[in-house]
Image (cartoon, rainbow, N blue to C red; front, top):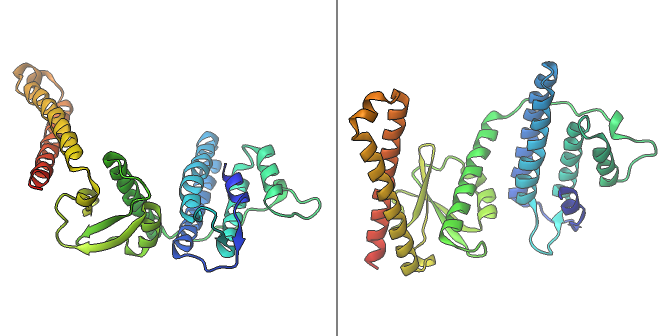
Length: 287
């Protein structure tokens, strides 16, 4: 699938978008980290783990993240700089996968670009690895979490991807330099740092930072109220079951401490969700 996607791109001599440059810089750092991990796994003969390292890197990081970020719009060309760097990174991934899947990787490698007579992936040396920028890798992981949370909000609220959303960052923005990636992947019109989130916004936490997506103008108010009421009823029923269990002296006296602690955490989480649901309902019912 990755090969078909890349092969069908139209290449043009246009300016490289910032989100593409950031994504390619990230994946190059990820690739260096991947090579370090593989070297250690091969040294310790952990071959099945090495295979999974390459497989997940190809499936998740290269195909699901990198290609999705740099992919041009419908019937739009891709800039030459991004295309050529992507082909290079594709070749690097094929080299890592080659010991495990020699025939298909050789075939794909041969077709990615024109080769000299007799050239083979089998005898191609891996490029050297460089020092890994761990801070940048961690920042990109935060950006990926932000993207995943916003997409979950779209799914939960039934908001089409074509509808632009806004993102609010409460307090300090931990990955502001990656805004172009977040905006592209989530179809955002803006990302703003604020001190108070909008009423009725859907919010989520990443680390100690709260993010919010204003939704009031995007929602079918009646449908959202009904959804929140149904979820509130479910959570209240769940909480009653937890409270009943923790009120049972026989259970509390005989259950392991870890089980009791888990049940108390479930209770606290349910109470927090119920409070949030009630707050959202109060705001919607006033409109």
